[in-house]
Length: 368
Image (cartoon, rainbow, N blue to C red; front, side, top):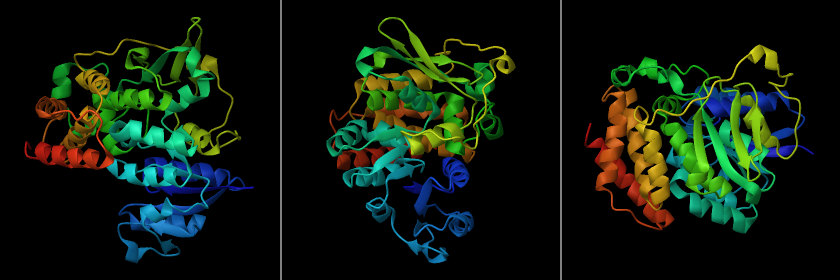
């Protein structure tokens, strides 16, 4: 029987690659709904090719070949076996919670969902018996390595280091948008690519890992690994280290997440050659150059609304950088400024999370 799936963010980088995976495995999946943003031309091409029953767009009147449904209704459709949440930003949180409430498994590629409301999301998933399978290559790697979380001593999350790994702080300060978007290993969306340049992306992943695997921050390490071959590892209490290895392609973790617990030969399946890789390098992150990583650790440990504040200020800063309004280092300076002024709410409700998020975004934009 085919697994029935809906994709939120089908016109984005992860969504497009997910459809490439599904095209290769057409006998394994049935697409129920596709949700895009404003790229209506691409969405209509996808509808024509994959023939979903329903579709969502910010231009609903221009959808051709499928019935329009709001995101909330797509995520309430219990004919879905799994929903891939691949939208960027806070827009992913509410649909994810709706899907969980309806007992639908989640393939999660949206970092903000757990950074903003990790406790709420994970507690709800547990109460509903819903699986949340991570799509990020790092968390997907950890998911594959863990057999018994009680025997895990440490999570080791790898980072490529981005385009500025071997650049000076001064070079980063004067970096252009084009330089920040020139990631050496991964083909990703613009926002996440800038986050990778500052290593904020890795900080967000640390917070995600804390929630996904229910492990303390002092047991989550980040190591820079430029080749991006080891996607992450775990250390067990007896000193054994288990790592997940593979080529740097998002097709592999996407396929794992939507196919779980089964595995199939897919679009990127081939024999791995250790001799071709030749060498693997590792180094400690430069905490002075990549201050975002330290900030994320601190916000995660503080908890409450601190990660909400950090995420909102960072996202607005990234957008401003991409529009040429500020420089790359200004993003992290804005995050620090917003955090200094923020009064942390210890256990915010969902309503409070969105109120704080909106308030921080407004205040951040006042600094451009």
